[in-house]
Length: 205
Image 1 (cartoon, one colour):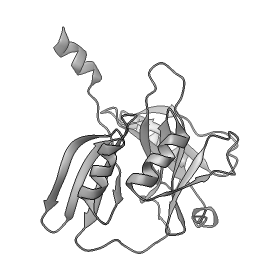
Image 2: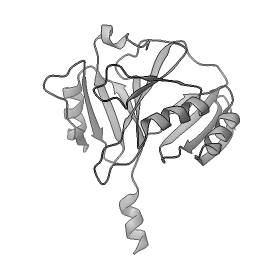
Image 3: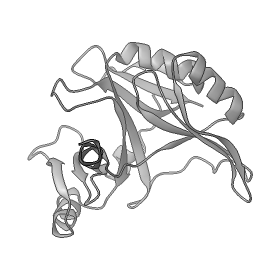
Image 4: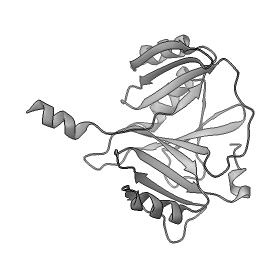
């Protein structure tokens, strides 16, 4: 029956927001390139204008223009959002899509082992990465947000003790930094990354 099927499909999710100078204009560009509006542009008192859309692959992303302006660039502390990664069926096309919609520059990720991986940058800083979505049957295009933690292993252990699940455990010998992916009790996926200050400061592409 449909109600039971829908129940299986509903789960929590994090939605990241990107700052743009004109939310309606960016939303119109997103739709013109095959996207879909989930929440139309709306002004919120003491906050600004917000909207949520899905790109041509179905990955959700929010748009925002703050009334108070954007904060300055800063080094993320533990507990701060530190990174975002888009998993797409066509990373090159996705990079071009967000270049049109948001104004990001699409750059080849020279650190990646695979050629079809990219960095999205603006203002001289790396903002996100784009990689190919997994070939697993249940995998689908989506944005994954990463929060900086003091210890990935400790954070994963706490997540499990609170009812979460480990989707990607931290490796025993990371090449550059520790990271893991969990699902919280509602099913929302979240990335965790452990950086030293020198690594966290490497924001420029």
